[in-house]
Length: 266
Image (cartoon, rainbow, N blue to C red; front, side, top):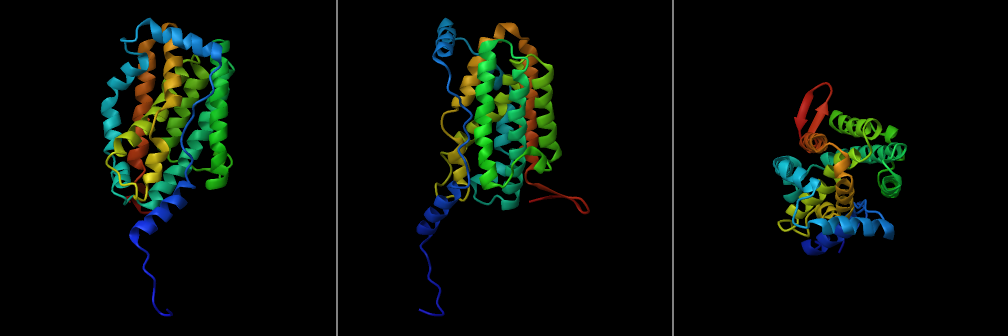
């Protein structure tokens, strides 16, 4: 009837909204196809002592306090409560594009001085996985390269630190600095998933990051493969530094920096 609006039932609106929103988020997965010969090598490594903790497990345990702090940031509380400011979400996703383009470059750089042929092949696979993922930024956010983004200081410092590790340190250390991003996002999503409403505005982010962290587990195995060749304390320091950057990024994500008026939480 003219002059009257038609009220759409909330459950229909939410489901339509979710169908639209999931098209705007690519599932975050940087796993690669590992050659059979390499799978056998990793399999033998895992059989040595299944009860012993991997280096990654030790690093995660030592940094779990940081992970919990990330989960408690306003950014993720607002995602869970369906009231995250869209400006905060969009701003971080655009900056994440910058981070991911830079991450792809890190694997390219590390390959130039890979520890051995197996490491080189793995780095090549990771480089391609980021290249494939980054292509989604072309369509969704209209971003083609990292130089098209003005990153916040937290993201820029994080990416610069990863570039330093990739270029200046032995290639296995790259796994230590890259693991926090790949595993933490998955861990946070898995923590939020049981509490979140599937009709929630940002449930697509949770769904796109939850599940099994296959890519991170592959890097965990790689790090373990070269464990005897690197300084464990140095690797742990690198991992903690990256975890601290993750906390800085998500803490700053809900703070709008207005150059003339100072900073404002959104």
